Amino acid sequence: MAIALPTVLGVAVWPHFIRSSWFFGMWACIFLMLRGDQWWLSVIKFVGVTVLGMTAAVLHPYPLFGGLFLAVVAAAAAWSIRRGFESVYRVIPIVVSLTIVAPEVQFQGRSSAVNIAWIGLMMFCGSLWTMVCWRGILERDRPLVKNEEVTTKTAAAFALVLGVCIGVAGVVILKWWPEHVAGWTMLTLILIIQTDAAETISLGENRITGTLIGLAIALMLSPIANYVLFATAFGTLLFLYAFWWRLFAHRSYRVFVALLTSAVVLLNSPPKHVDVIAMDRLVFTLAGVALAVPAMVMIRILTRNERHAST
Image (cartoon, rainbow, N blue to C red):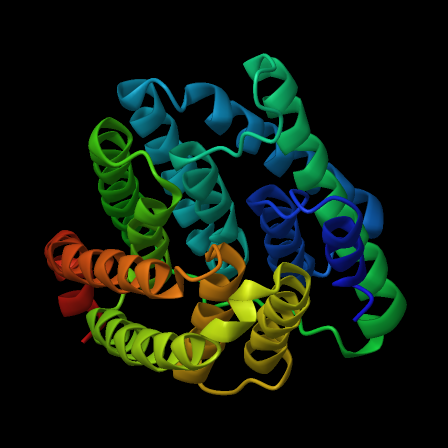
C-alpha cells in the first residue's frame, strides 16, 4: 500500500500524473534490490538506470542509433549471467526498451528537454520511493537472487544473441511501430530467452497461457477502467502483488504473468478501450515468443561444443 500511495495521490490531484516512467522506476528498484546491495550503491544504480532511460528518450526519433543503443544495453545485461546476476540486471534493458519505443510526453507544447527531464525525475523518484518502502517494511524478508554462474563462452553467446535480437527488433519497431504497445515484443524477448532451450520453451508456454488468463481477467474488470482513480489504485496494487507472488512467495510464473498482464492492461487502457489494449498485448506477446525461437536455436548452435564437453 505504501509503495502505491504516491501513484494514487498523484492521479487524484493531477489526472495526467499516471505515466510509465514512475512504474519503470518501481520495476527497476524491485529487481535491483535483489542483489542485496547497501542503500547508497542501490541509489547509484538508480541514477544509472535513470540516465539510460533519459538517453533512450533522446534516441527515440533515430531508429538506427536507438537500435544500437538497445543492443549494447541488452548485451551488457545478458553478460552479467557470467557471475549469476542476469536475473537482476535483465530489468535494465526492459526499462530502456519500453522507454525508447514511446517516451512519455507529459507537457504538450514544451521542448523535448522538459519532457526528457520529467522522465528522468519520475523514474528516479519511483525507484527511490520504492527502495524506502522496501527497506522500511520488507527488509527482513527480502529475497536475494543469484543464479548459477556459466562459462565465458556461454555468457558471450547469450549476450551476442540477446543483443542482436533486441537491437534488430528495436530498429524495426522504432521505424514502423513507435508505440508503447510494440515494446511488449522486446519485453517478451528479454524475459523468455535463456541459455537453456528447455527453459526458454517453458517460459514461452507460461508466458502465452499467463497472458491469456490475464487478458480474460482484465476484460472482466473492464468497467473499472471508466473510473481512472480506482483503476489506477487497483492496477497498481495488482502490479505490486504480482511481484510479491513471484519474488517472495516463489509461486508460479504463469500466475505472475496473469496478474501482471491484467494490471498492465488496466493501467494502460483509456475508458471503454480495454479490449483494444488487450488485443495489442496478445499480438505483441505472441510476436515476442515467436521471435524467441530462432534466438534459442542460435544459442544452442553457439554453445554446442560446451554442451558436448559437459556430457
